[in-house]
Image 1: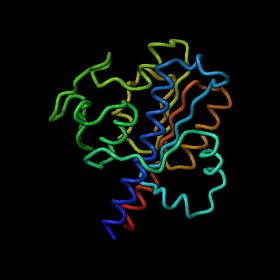
Image 2: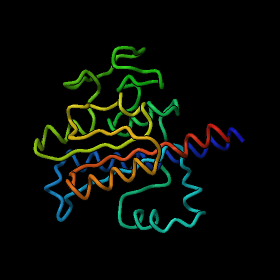
Image 3: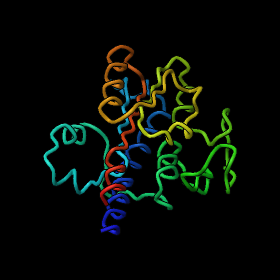
Length: 200
């Protein structure tokens, strides 16, 4: 049972890595150069299995897949802990470059030094790159796992909200998007990972 959960988590991270890598390349090349695209929303569900998405009735997710970027065949980085993988997604580099090798990583507490450091003392993120290239961009993050907050270049954001639970996180993101229409929005939901840890 534990192996199956880990295998599914690998596959999920694979899908998310591709989406974020695509978004990173897209952001780096400048949003204004892509015809008709003004807003990018990255939705990450920690621990969600692509197998589950493919088997379940998920019309909204299906629509996002059809109209957005996705893959079911990319791979996670090792180790498959949350911080190394989320940082790889938002930094477009593996732990050997970011220096983020475990969930206990902190900007001032690490075993491996990053190969590059941005203005806030951590490996550069897609958010910092966008801020550098488009200073007027509106950048937002809504998350319900505190570990995400330490991986972010906080000065790159207009808003970062650490909320309680997926419903509150999603609602705050929706409200902010309606009001500000951010250039880049990152929504991180942790409930599937929490369920996996609790129920296996």
